Length: 238
Ligand SMILES: Nc1ncnc2c1ncn2[C@@H]1O[C@H](COP(=O)(O)OP(=O)(O)OP(=O)(O)O)[C@@H](O)[C@H]1O
Ligand SMILES: [Mg+2]
Image 1 (cartoon, rainbow, N blue to C red):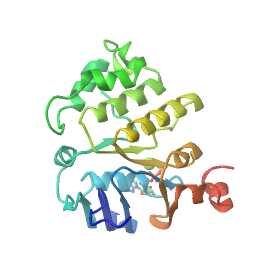
Image 2: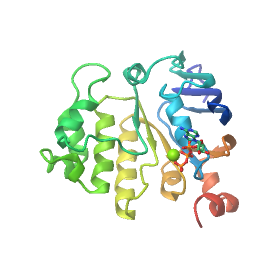
Image 3: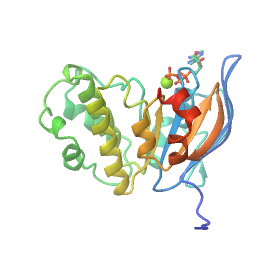
C-alpha cells in the first residue's frame, strides 16, 4: 500500500564515535507505525550504541533521527521520551531499593499525555501486581525485566525500544516477554527489538535488520531471515 506517511522512526546515515573510535557507520533503518522490527547483531556489533544514540544519550555522532517526520536528533532523552519513545535499557537500570510501585511511578515522569495508567500496566504483568510493595532489587531476573518493560510503558509510548530483553532469561520468561510484546503490538504499540540470537523475536516481527561491525548489512522481511541458512547459523545459533 502506498502512503505519504513518514515512518514512525527514521534513522538516517548515523555515524557514532567514542572519542576517535568510530562504532556505527552510515546506519539507516526505519520502523513504520504498527510494526515490530528486530535488529539482530552479535556482541559488540553496536546495538546498544545505536539505541543510546536514538535516545540522545550519545552526542558524538553525525546523521539524523526522525520521529513522526520530526527531527529529534538534538533532543535530550527526557524530551525524546515525551515525544512517545520509550527505552528498556540493556542493564534494566531499576532502582533496587525502591518498590515495584515506586519504580513504575518514576516511569511516568516524562509521560505522553494525561494520567499514566498504573492499573492497565500492572494488569499486563500479574506477577508485578502481586509484588507492588516489594523492593525491586529483590525481584528475580525475569521479574526485573518485566518491571523494566512495565516502567517504560508507564510513559504511554507509541514506540518502545527493548535492548536485549531476553538476556539472561529462561526460555519460559522469554516467551512470556515476547508474547506480551505481541499483545501490545496488536493494541497499537510499535516495537523495536534488539537481540543477538533469539529466533522467537523474529517470529513475532514484521521485518529485521542485521548489524555487523557497526554497519547494516541486510534488511528483509522477518520470515525471510528466519529461513535463511546463513542467518540461522550466524545469528540464531541453529
Ligand atoms: N563507552 C565506550 N567507550 C569506548 N568504546 C565503547 C564504549 N561503549 C561501547 N564501546 C565499543 O563499541 C562497540 C559496540 O558496543 P555496543 O555496546 O554498542 O555493542 P552491542 O552490539 O550492544 O554488544 P552486546 O551484544 O555485547 O551488548 C564495541 O566494540 C565496544 O567495545
Ligand atoms: Mg548491547
